[in-house]
Image (cartoon, rainbow, N blue to C red; front, side, top):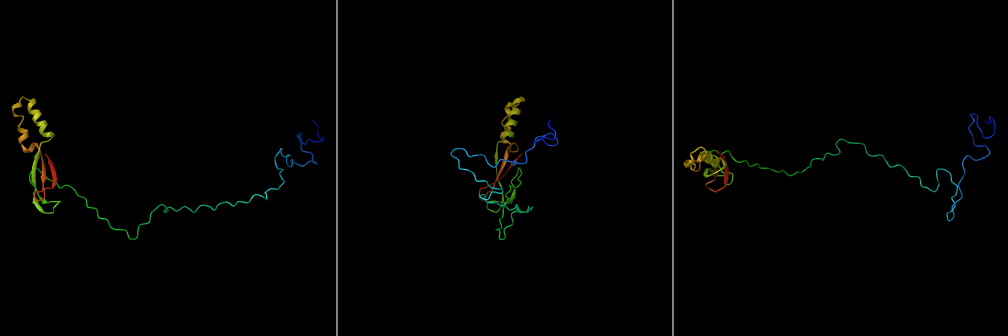
Length: 156
């Protein structure tokens, strides 16, 4: 290499000569392009934008809705069907609020048909009709004798 020669540093790497500017100012404009005036950083023609303000601090209760000051009171009445059994029951009718003894209507169920089918399978086919006349093999539907409202069913 050229130790100590012009254009080379102490390590032998080329350096910029001292009589030239470190960077070219601007390249010549292209045809049809307006010439760019040299400017220094920061650019005087560009407005200086300020940073946006920081977000507000985190509040753990910010997602909680405050309770209303004059909230209306709402009453919810839960209606459950009363417990009824296979016999007429003495109770207060939920519909007409009178004290009554329920009226029963019996209705055949799947249990009734299964009992009749089992009698037919075990050579008792002449007796298949017995579950259809015995009330204990049927569902007991309870009704109010005063207003006729349905109260509940006993599945025996």
